[in-house]
Image 1: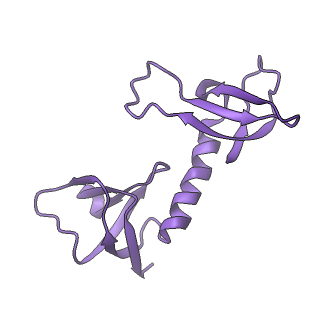
Image 2: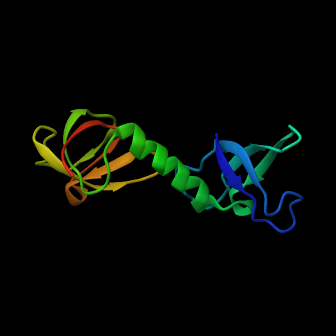
Length: 129
């Protein structure tokens, strides 16, 4: 669970930070629907909050920190890829060899070599930082 900062002035928990997690994430980013978060109030109730009611950037930064810590590498690190996940790769890109991490997002997608590959939650070994 992560901290959820309530930013909706119409919500009774406005200004509070509650523990909770994302229950539904619009992976296609269509804009047709908010993401859904479930948080626990200080008195133990579970409440639903929409992404439009919280500081989503604050929440995503916590997820990004967790993803980066679990991977053991950060943006700019040169790494060897030990295990891939699903992803997309440019035509001539190969997993073997040393690669540079150029982007990490809060969902666990890692971009290598300025966009030549993006892999979901790869296992890597840092060779230089």
